[in-house]
Amino acid sequence: MRRSSLFGIIVLLLSFAAGDASAHALLDHAEPRVGNEVATAPNEVTLWFTQKLENAFCTITVTNSEGQRVDTGKTRMSGNQMSVSLRPGGSGTYHVKWRVLSVDTHATDGSFTFQVGQ
Ligand SMILES: [Cu+2]
Image 1: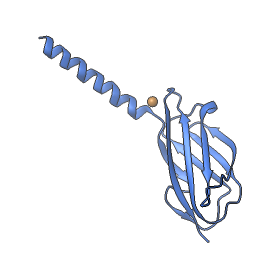
Image 2 (image 1 turned 90 degrees about the vertical axis):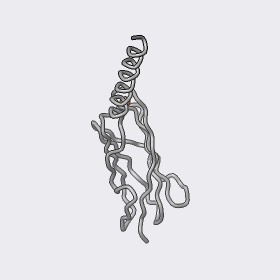
Image 3 (image 1 turned 30 degrees about the horizontal axis):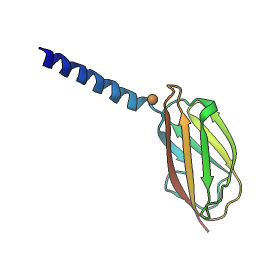
Image 4 (image 1 turned 45 degrees about the vertical axis):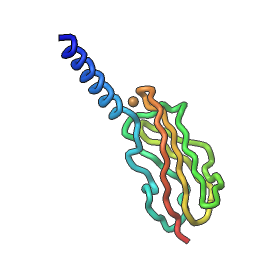
């Protein structure tokens, strides 16, 4: 009897944990697209998330192939979308790092790259 109620509690906790994980703001897609190559350096990067974002605590950092920061630091946000303007950074691999706080107060972060052609 004790054992079965303990099992019930564990199942309940696991289902809470699973529900919570799906509620975090994860990267849905980006422009330029994750891993893709674009012909010319874009003048901004836009990220779309799976959940609405809490404006005050979200950042995007973009560096070019030489590791120089090319984002202007000014992010624009609307709902589940966040953009940052870029300075010219030449060709090569760009790294995008993001950190966001979703409206459910959970912080998530991640990174991806895209290529800029010659
Ligand atoms: Cu969450």
